[in-house]
Image (spheres, rainbow, N blue to C red):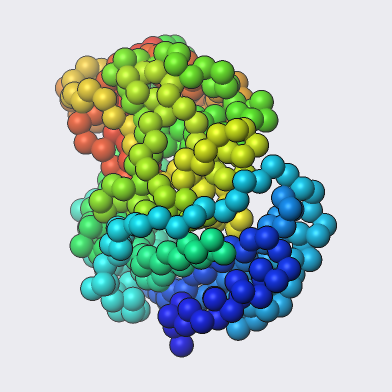
Length: 434
């Protein structure tokens, strides 16, 4: 049975909830997924799952309760648990759940032709292995997953939104001697991923990282790949744009709206209406309509992100920035599709150190912006191409200050999770080597 079609139980749930509390919110997901894993070049595991999950929030006189279940038939017990939890909560400033607005009925990230079957996953694995044959490295592991499902959000104000979503995720890891390489891809359709390129890039970085050259400690122009840049961006910069962190004094950017915090040719925004992007949606995880949110425009800080709870505490309006980490997760501030843009140019034409990825971004200090990370698959850039590999080295600095030293953005962006980023060239950054 497809639970989301049976709206009667959702209406019954809201009706019964309103007999005891001021407001009720329902977040319901259902879907099917198939995944296949590689161990070296053999399929070691292939699994299929059909899942459904329900989360209920209740609000009564500013007291918020919540409960979740993976069995929607037990919604009455889930509702009772949410109401009971609300009795124990501390009252807070609360101005109500969203009211309904007319939204387009189109699905941003859904491919009705995607076949969520084991054969689809196996075929994707085989294409990755075909691409991996381009370079003589050994495959260590990999995986392919395909999924499709629906998300429904309803509340006691009359909001009722449902959208369909699908996803294809690929990854492959390889080794050559002591050098490793990896690559991944993700999109809502199998037609938008490139499994052969995933395989080729994984073995390319494994084989071409062999025999790295020592680099002396010093200041170098660097090029952060979209992968390396996204790791640092998500660990340091994005948390500083959260209204919750601003409110609690945990953001270095607090009080700096209107100030120049990056180079003139740098802009950063969240575009939840970007066609084909994985995070696109007409409404957020609380039913608030989404809109483009400019955080930095031409280097100037424009504003912060808010969900309902944080907005009410700050005297602001929600920016439609609430996300959930699965059906059991409560709403929290997060990005839909973070886009970095500005003047584009060839940033490989001058010598630099290319940083494919970094290790240890999670150890950075999000308050100060200070970081020290290990470089993974770094290369010298010569004559516009990746040249000799660099032996192990560390990159240290301050991520906020780094944005004042951006020398250019590459011409081609790629999606890395919720981020759509170009490679970024930055002047004179400290690398600790030999």
